[in-house]
Length: 361
Image (tube, rainbow, N blue to C red; front, side, top):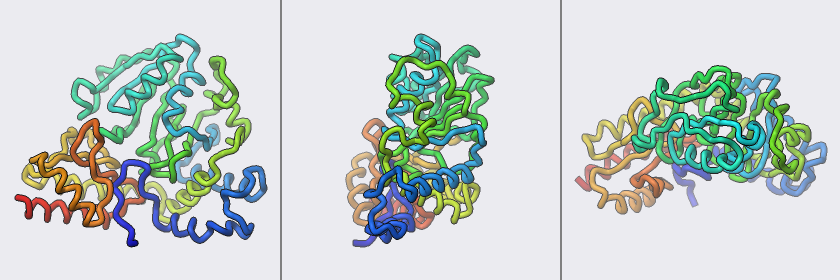
């Protein structure tokens, strides 16, 4: 079977060279005669793998020395309650900026553990734009400010880092991490589910400033404590060794591409190619998101006639274009353009869209 062009929002495409290497090493990793999944996470071989993966991620993101890098489980969703449990006193205010589905979910999951305050929201605008900065209601005494730089479902993205003063800034970067350079020093914590730009589902990467780990936390089991995970080098319990291994291969692949500045240039070109096709279609296709808030990673769009949706999805799949159906919350179509999605894939999609419009009128 030939490979398709995969536009899935997550689990998403993984770079083909990474998959090919994993396939080659599946039965005999690193000369051990066994799969990496079959070896002890306490053994010297896996510990060396883990150290190299962290070193490569630190190099890619220029992570300062006063930050810990954790490879955890539970995905980003588990971090929604863990953030207030670890960083807020019981009843302490925490500010949330909500720009879509995942911001909403972060608020709901954090509510039992902090005085969650929605400091800004674009819900009234159907999450098609970003809330104006001058309207953000932030408190200097808040435990932290949480936001989602890129909303996967609604396709909105912050193109800079918001200034929140001295309050620690926490970001769910699940769908934008490693898509371009970011100044890690602006954040108290960055976390990201792996299944979009890092590797397979079941792994989450957390980057946490040292001072946050010394905060007085709420009562919790050790397994929920970031400080405990840091003290045990992400091996407080048996980690997702397969996910960690594939993440490390992805970090190495990114370095081979020239790093995050190089991948950012490619991502910008992919996004501009698709948006130009949508905006230049004479209304046949439309992207509802305000241009200044459009995501590079997740591009939602609609057809001028919704009755054509089924035909578009069926024909696109036949053309080798996978997972273009939009999320049920917004409908229409969505093309996710993560790092592993090539420019060739986007150009093929654009050609299909043009041909579909010509044939269906």
